[in-house]
Image 1 (tube, rainbow, N blue to C red):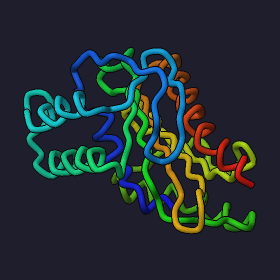
Image 2 (cartoon, rainbow, N blue to C red; image 1 turned 90 degrees about the vertical axis):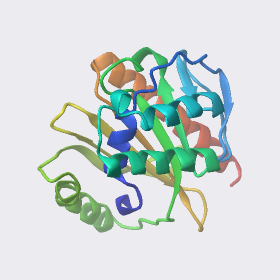
Image 3 (cartoon, rainbow, N blue to C red; image 1 turned 180 degrees about the vertical axis):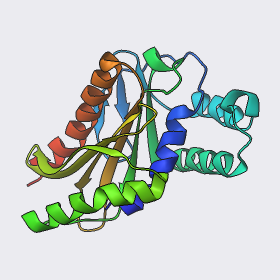
Image 4 (spheres, rainbow, N blue to C red; image 1 turned 90 degrees about the horizontal axis):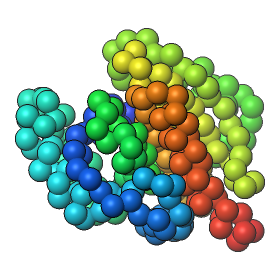
Length: 214
């Protein structure tokens, strides 16, 4: 499941400057089929802020890197946002922090977990896969199969040595795809609380109408 998402890219996205003031939106319509009222100061990356972000990515003074691979990956992510394959949400209160509160939403391969042993296998493999991706041991905070509005949700969270917490939640929509939410916060406990609450709101926005269709 986790192999479908570039976790290193998620960290790069959270480091993207986005040094701009964006009017926080209230109700947003996701391209993944749900509508939510965002908490105060949260906004979805739209066409205006996307143009500014694209400019920032290609300015090494802003992104603070000359790593061409990192720049290519970030430009690729922004193109996926433009095309609708990925949505990105940011927290205005933390835009000027070193690591921004953010959540990405994107389609993922379908998955089905039918046994406790499958959950255990996925969770047991997680530390080694994170170590392979990041080149060092990563502290796993949680890994479990749960449910939101009666829909299965595979959840895991981990903390990077730089103090960044990543939370990933994957829920199936149908036999063709699932939707994965990946949130990141490198801020204080209040910043992390804001991230958790908003990600749960988005997850609830997706799963509630899916449950109603049953």
